[in-house]
Length: 391
Image 1 (cartoon, one colour):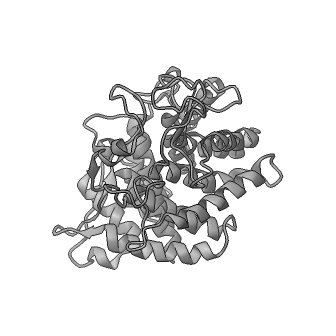
Image 2 (cartoon, rainbow, N blue to C red):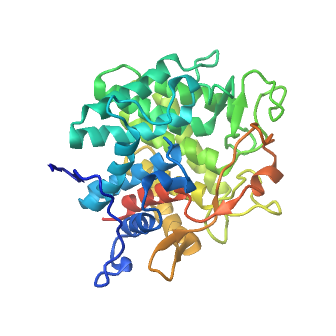
Image 3 (tube, rainbow, N blue to C red):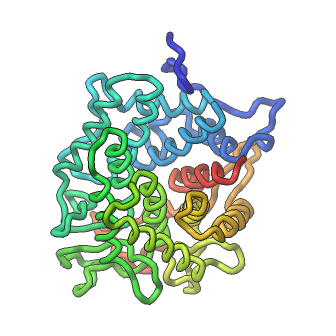
């Protein structure tokens, strides 16, 4: 059995709970959350409340955050937990269980970010092959007339803000790592969807845009959906701060991308809940009856503000604002359970447009989607935000 940096070469999953002599509250909050999830969900393929293994963007988001926490604290137990997912899903030949290129689902790209560090730690060639496979999808992925990636093959001509986080950071990191000139294409994705979904009234972004203007949820003139959904704007903002690390200065469109990030950060201040400091499920209707403060988008905004200010993309004031909001998040959404684990409450489980349930993107639709604790889409961003706060 070989020992690897931050990965122990065993296929046995370590279920971690706080030792009796070391309470969870004595650990950094990022580790408290990670250990709690490892105790709640011993099998990584069951993350995101799944009953069967699937190459899943939500699991990828959570495990990416855990990967960064493991690196920060040299925690091999957490590293092993991450490894069990990619070890299970990536086959010996580099194929990925449950993944098909020709589905052209942009969501499937996100978990590929796990592969870079796992390959560096293990030097197992299958992980490089899997990253190449995911990259190959974007070579033939259907695009709008301006060059924007469709959200999915089954959602033709549509760009969703969610998709920017799913595809662009992986593409930019892959290009930077392997010497492929993709930076301008990655930036182009943000500018296309930003141009079409930007709402002049709120200075926020509508959830999605249908280039064909034929979907029942799309405005017949603009092609936009009705509202600025909180998490959609969170995906877009996180994607911007993550992708900019891999976009060289001078890349066409980079300056406009920075302006969009800065303007969105300012716009979010105007729709922040005055009592909790958090953000609402439907951002552009903050005081409408039935709306509620929601944890996944709040964690995404906090992470983006903290990282964006640290890297100089945002005004330094957002470091202070982000820290304040982080503490308010802990007060509003963090729950300590009797078994010693830590939970995040009030997570919107899922929201989208169209599909078999005919999701119409109305205010009533968004506020009635299921709410649950410990959704990966809150866990991941909150752990990343915690790493920005922790020494």
